[in-house]
Length: 329
Picture 1 (tube, rainbow, N blue to C red):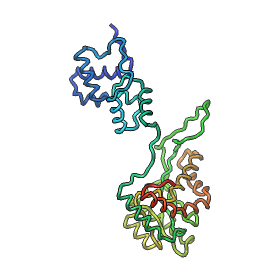
Picture 2: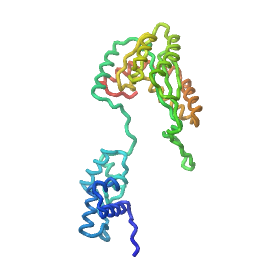
Picture 3: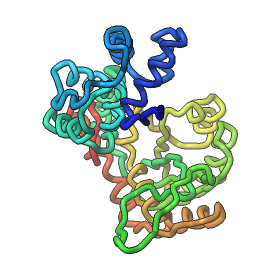
Picture 4: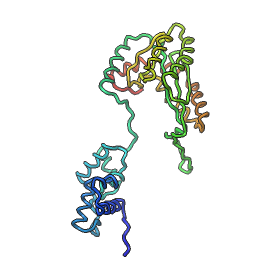
């Protein structure tokens, strides 16, 4: 007698569950091995005990609509992991409906299949400190003398973004972040570019101090002979005693900065512009990537850098207007 091959993923899972139950495996272990819920294991066990078979009756197509229990279970699974597909949900819950039925329900229930929104993970403490800092900055009058700084990473084959592709051409792009990366440090102000430093090794306090000494201090004194305010965030290497001592001894003034506040730093906008330019160049080696980063820095219009550097008062005002929350800029 030839055994029938399971017709669906759900049926195949029921066969796996039956085999494990007959072997005496614990139901909890079966849930993890087959990746199903406990109610599914219990349902199969009941079918084996009552009917002696795990197959549904001939002609039975099972449920054609989602029940209230199924809908609640779907929502619960999505709250645990929003990246599960409709097919995954059907398999996990052993639902006898099509993935399209599940998708249609999710759309009616207010779900949308999209990328997650990016936002700052701000606690009440972060929000309070941001609001206090912004209110203090309302009386600050030297915005045009602030040197903003930041670091970012540029990945080789960073092609995971939207583009125009013809339907008749096979031009899939590689998105491989294991091919390597380069880091960059920039400093800028209302008077334009201060410096760019590219490097491959990880940044620590000692290396950061060298960047400040050979990059920022050297050029900042030329751009601001009368003095300036240096800004950096609260990264541990920025707040290390070695770094802070160097800043106190070699820079005229240091601007305090609230934690979790990249949205207040205009350098973030420069990173977005630079990464867009680098992506268009499509570098294929680390040497080409470093050159592309350096070229991107100088391709950004100087007036744009000056304008962004003078945007801090507007950012402060927006942050105050929403009581310390994250701003869009």
